[in-house]
Length: 311
Image 1 (cartoon, rainbow, N blue to C red):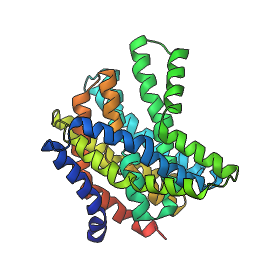
Image 2 (cartoon, one colour; image 1 turned 120 degrees about the horizontal axis):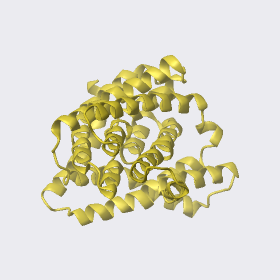
Image 3 (tube, helix red, strand yellow; image 1 turned 90 degrees about the horizontal axis):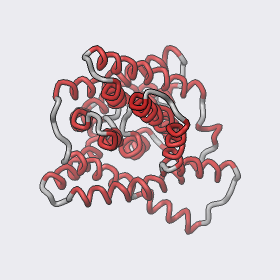
Image 4 (cartoon, rainbow, N blue to C red; image 1 turned 120 degrees about the vertical axis):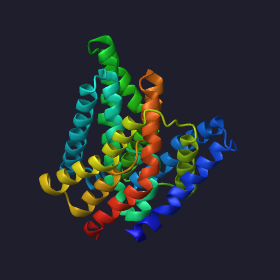
């Protein structure tokens, strides 16, 4: 595990640099917002497009993989929801706690770090995990919040969910990349070089942005945040491992990547949604902070644990 920890340490060190810059005021919240926007819309999208343009849908999509990840994630989603409801929390709060329990920072942390640690073959499985998180659980939280407030489901809700997915640059980049691959369209050399340069900025930019954004997070609702961090960092990868290795018998390497992706800390976009809907932003904020700090150790432990599955 020590060797794995040393490999992951530079990634978390960049997060630490971002955090220090944010806490000291050297990097303002406005600067963090613009850096995040650059990474989200340009650097990370360029990386995803370039990766997916070199893959075919048949290489990425695997029903067993999707079923295993969905089953493991849904199990923890239900457990966290049930615990929240038993504590007397309203459905809106329970829904956001469930998001914290299963939605990891796959886009900003997982893609840059896991591809470098586990190899480029990890790209396909990671993109599948990202797609399930965005399409299934990203849509589910909007449906639950809107439905609980309106008391019913409407076409307008489904339309807004669909438009939200179409506006997500990560989804768009993956779809366009797979389209280019499927049509066997050549990418001109200058365009490929542009994508390569932009994509290279994704790793340091995303990690620095994570750290800088953490500087504004609060440590309120400590007990709840601790439980949600435990759910995300321990229960989620454990449930996914059980589903992948013993129930659906996913190919070992793909299973290892899936488990590693499930071990990532709570995603920042959960906080953005919590702020947007005005639901439990403080506990979500604390969960992101706690889980990111703890993941310095837990992610290394999980990757060391799945190491025997790697080729």
